[in-house]
Length: 216
Image (cartoon, rainbow, N blue to C red; front, side, top):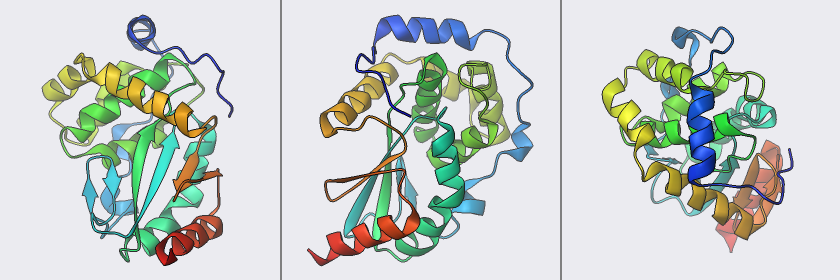
């Protein structure tokens, strides 16, 4: 998953994104199938975009696009082990960052993530979005589907939709994308530990990087 050099953000793309959000899409995954954080990250503290204890000695920065199939696979195959070990034991915490480069629905999903974070439910929606992931820009993650997922998680829908549309959400996503470029991120998922970029890394590599960072 390599992004183009010219990842255009801002008002123009957001306008396109909102138009795409309204178009009909394929049958969505029922909200009841969206796994809650309690099932995947039981016993791990959560705060906004961060997962893990605030005083953990090592921070893992995670750059993802919600439409990225590799991100979904990473979340299913690597993240649970990382959560059960380094995160739950307090050795590290992980912080999510948007790198929405696959199209309009990536930007819509990123805005939805910010809206969920405002209600303290980012990681619940993170899990639900990946469970509902479909082909890129097919309508699987349009605004109606994201609202459906949020409703299934019990979020305040009026606040959720308002926060998705709020003017500050777009610049926050843009800033995350710009920072990713500054750090050399050009694919997803990219994990950064102590300044080291690990692209699509497996559990063993991440655990080793955490242990090395903690020792220095």
